[in-house]
Image (cartoon, rainbow, N blue to C red; front, side, top):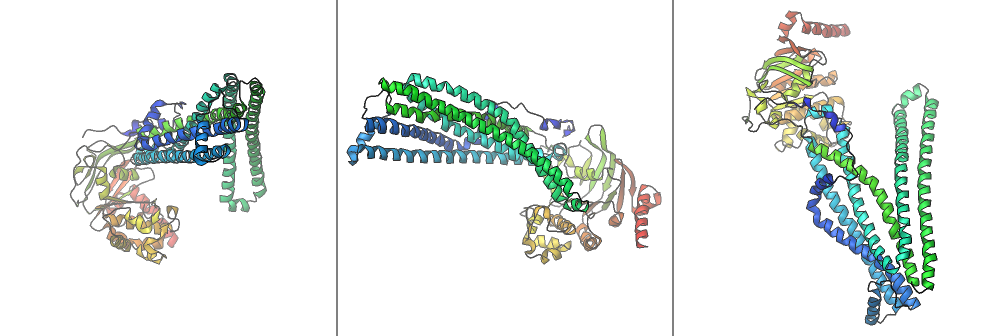
Length: 626
């Protein structure tokens, strides 16, 4: 394996950069088809169903105008307006059933209406189902991809940005795809109705079509204006919520300092601003609705004025005039819907670009092409050989660090904050890339091992112990099928966690709240020890693992720690020197360099940094005890 180029050279700001935001990105849509392709049958079926529903919608209007009004009421059989075969079908039903013409037409209308309702419902059901399943697969693939990005990625990219891609951006794609389906449902009747209208009266159809661009322009300007108005509404609501959260979460400080009136005044000002912005959005929406209603009224006026003249001149039937009034909504609604969907489409294209940017982000820990296989049980020897490392170029964290931890040896690492202690552990866990020949596990270059194999042999207990949703047992097992319930309980007993777990009502089956808030800090730490012990690693790392535990709890785990570290190589990182008395060797780091290395006796005799830290801490203890 050759030395690798680390991810430090990547420009992670690109992950947060503004993307092109093209209204229609065909390449992106083409990539999206990959996740919809497995459900293509459902999409085809949905398309067929929407065509049936659209045809039925037009037929219902023809039954009312051409059959009921012209044929049955007026008795008009000859008309330039096509009846789509409904008159003949009405006559056939009349002959077959013996019903009157009116009842036969009513029966046909009922059948077509049921067909319209069922086809429309199945269309929406199959379309939504196909979209949800496709986006479910996309979300799962995106989650799996982001879960395998290295720590170096999350050092540079806020987690909130990633969460937005997995949640909000996927939801934006759902709204877009569902909107495309609704557009099909609107535009199919639009074109069918247009064909029927042209065959009935070209002049009147052209008059009505002249209003369609007006609706389109009005919709465009409304969406353009409302975008800024709605943004201000969202910002004002956000400010209200932020103010409310700050005041309620800090209610004790508010009351102690007598800030109730001042805070109320500030909240009232924010509330007035929110009301002002809400009024603007309401006025804009009301004006737009009134404008569209006015255009509808103008369209009705044109139909009545022009259609009446056509009826008088026998160039158009009364049913034709009624049909035009019924079809007018089919002309205007798709244009309004299209305007609404353009905004959705714009947002979805930006969301899609962000999603695929995340999927294309190939940063990862480099794994060996032919990894070395470790034996079932390793000795646990660790060697750092002239390790130098930096998270950012020009800002070195570790410089020429070398030391060896023998199998079964206990090494303590101490040093000021920022000296590189935790970085050593992250490198040992293969969370970052670094050149070959620096770090060895049982004399095998760690870069020649698969990261999963390394992490299964190195158990780490961090100060910030993470609790997952589920039971206490789930948090010990972590889904490892090789660990049984009895093994988990035995591990908990070893680290003295069994006592508090057994005192809970449901014991090991107790459900933990978010981040384990129904446990104390000490109990969570004991649970962390049980989790690591159950996995039975050969190398144990304690990174400030007892820093947040009270003295009584710390005494409880001392016996457990001795058993936990027995026959294991252990690395202990701590600021409190009294927690590392059992260490065989102590490594003192300062500014990323090895300053001192040896046993505690040897370091105290050096009279160096460790001696100073030791004197300061234990002098404080003597003062307190005195």
